[in-house]
Length: 444
Image (cartoon, rainbow, N blue to C red; front, side, top):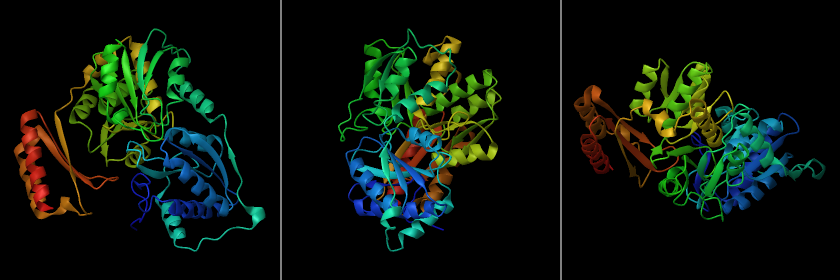
């Protein structure tokens, strides 16, 4: 069954444009509450990032859940992975995140977590959408859900993050520049690193509701690169607006992306005898990652793009480590979802154990040149299956042979088609990628 509202990563869009409106959120809260209330008296936790619209949607969801007879725990601004963790520790039936992740402030969205801190199964999402078609009713006054704020949520999550690395890890003497993207980690990540002994220089850690992800964070590392070099820091850490993505910068000011970080963590877990099975990447993972893992005798499989699919592949193989080039890294042996802070600590642990720089650790993987261009769509259209586009893809693949690969993929969150070509000659793949982009644009 096709879902009307839920995409690969919850429900997301521009604030004020359906379905990202207060009336929809009221009904969504009620519908979700009715579905979870079928199991008896339910309790749902709500957290959000730092967007100004989060306050509006938090109130609407709270009202809808209360009308359905569901108790609500309010966390305020908290990273997405913190909400997954706290959903479990508070024994909630579900967790709700109000966030559009790495998108600009004028977007927002809703993510749900199950009682286990994982993404909701399809059948629950279908049930919520079916409930949205029903007339909204309110339970008897005595059965209305109660709401309360959790005052120590940040402290709980800080201790959890610190507990994911061995107790003897000491970052004393390490200078770290930390970019919180003016997002949900602004009051969490600096304390985690400082309490582990690091000297922390935090930037983009003053959210005002409008500056989340604005020229900062995991999607824009130029500022971080400059500050790392200027401060002669050991490394830089960039998180995104809701804290589930991680990109790092080495002491030279060079960006270290999700593929390279995945390799570093995998290699360290293997050396420690803690790597269970292999590594899950995605269709977008650099071919250099696959080659490096093969040389290290670490199995590697590709899932569809999206943390949901990475998690599904990890569960299917019963492996513990996976992630995306964008920096969404899942350490399944430590937590139930992608977590930027937890992943960063794993990298810092590898640096500490090996007495190595971040630049030194990434040398074991040689990234293959990759060119990706986003083609914006004016309307929803299956461009990838058009005959002219398929013929152009086949032609480029034939010319590349075993020297590279091609991928055309519709975005799961934006009206885009991502055109990617990977190969061993940067100039050549640029030309081939532009060829495909021209064909796609003409087909539109």
